[in-house]
Image (cartoon, rainbow, N blue to C red; front, side, top):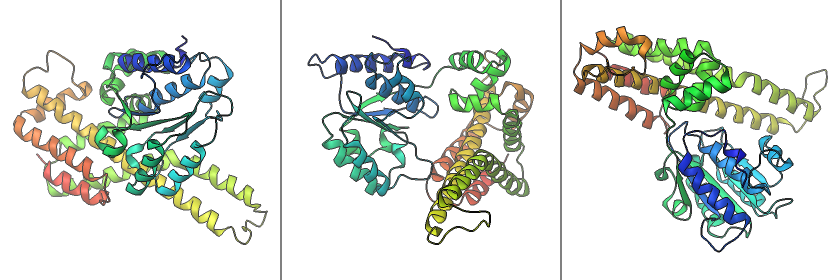
Length: 386
């Protein structure tokens, strides 16, 4: 059986083995229970949940089990396969109206494949009403509809939904595996690849970002250095403001080109002429686009803040590594900042550093709710001063 679509996935051998058995059972039914209609892919950020789910979807839609070279596989790669629905949540939540639309499309008969596959990349962002609507569809799926949900943990999904899904738990790829991937695909030096792999803690998307955006590496060092040098209230307040500034800059950078293209596309669709005036009755479309873009930037900003907090947490892990006396046996996550970390490690106990790490994790959790980011960061940095 062809398995080319799984070839680019690293560190998930056990999960791929399970999925390959399911693909075989689906293509050549043998009465086994390897193939089910609802799946839940879980794993830490960067483990490749959506990539594994899409590879599985493509393999199910391919007559050869995921050859990577046929028309079906090319359509999946270009996100244009008629029997594949991929739901990417770019806002803060996935609402019931969107889910109802998904359910409606999922009920269609496959046009060219054995199955109709629906991938929901951020199932943890379903609102309660949306999750309940999805539950009904999963309880009584169409005869040839396959649901693939992705979420960081099983606890992020309603118990009633996860109980009806076969669960595939992914793991964080090793530093060595990520570094080899970066050298091979990003054409970077071994030293840069090793740094990005360590700094990202196995998060492949984050590692690629660090490699492709040199400025992001400087901002990362700035955030870590700031956290390690905090010693007064003024510094904490200034640090929180700087974190917000960095997050806003990264969010705007990610969204600006796309937002402009979307506005231009909508203007053309509405027939905006040389006067620049939109025709009567188009205000709702313009407001909807503006709302969607604002929601996207809000999420991107929070994601950037979360990355910064994770970067700070790696510095605390390095501090404990130094304090436990094993820093000479292995590289630190932030090896290039070893001198700063060693100096700071002498000014606090492991218990104090661990408390700071716990405060960072608590703030990360709170930011998933409707908490003002600046206030949360100010409160955090006041607590973790040295």
